Length: 362
Image (cartoon, rainbow, N blue to C red):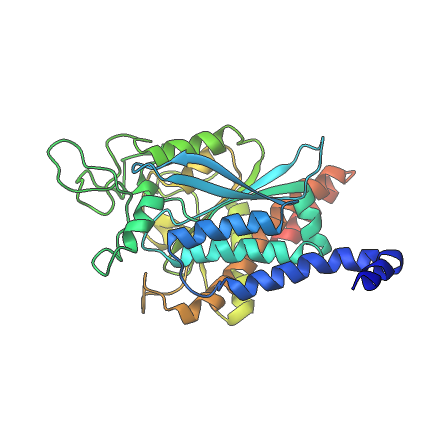
């Protein structure tokens, strides 16, 4: 064996260096099933495994604590480029506890970009220019509670105690952000599934996320928050009286992403603002991110259209993740090329042409 390694080190060292990460990834895929739902402790172990398997490009960051004092963690994925100022992509999953397909997608997404960046020149370039911040489970307390037993499987909110005089638990974290908070599509009833909290950012989870993202907001090119269900791609804003300044761009890129989704398994996604294709709401993380100046802010509503709803069978995880990955990658690629291709283009007209081609997926 020693002689074989010595021989390869002289004549084929590049091949060895390329094959070792792929072999590691293969072994890890055999151990971890991306096409089943995992409880929180298994997801945390998986995050640690990603750091161990890909130490050069993955770090785990703890950026908050929940009401019940659990850690909120993310994986930062990107090629280290000392001295270079990088842009970033945000993705969070599991803001609503019962939407188990969302954390499954975040795990799948990380596994795919890590498997492809060594052999895919575009992914390598994007990981050199951007860092991916991925939170597999944002509402950790709620997610843990949804795994308790069959009676808690459809829990949606976090686990904060209600205000004085209320015996119910939980605030809908996706109604708690400071974005037209409390104005529409919410409830002041603390027992409601869409209870928006006692004030904007009343929950520790939303406070920690907004501090982390807000303190780096100039770095983020896009903000993707993953939900289920409905097969939708939602653009800002949830309030019908407000329209995003770059609404046309958001729609064009979103429609391109929906086409990318459909090409994978024929699944159709609708694209639009929440009031137009779903229902009006306020206080969402998507709207907050756009108000911070993050231009490409989207909510993905994954499978299905209601047949199984929040209890999407495990035999649909793979297809759901594959198609959503294609859609997300369309948005991310657009954001990357618009920023870095236009940065090196010599004329405004050239940059405009590049942007239009990217919107159309050409």
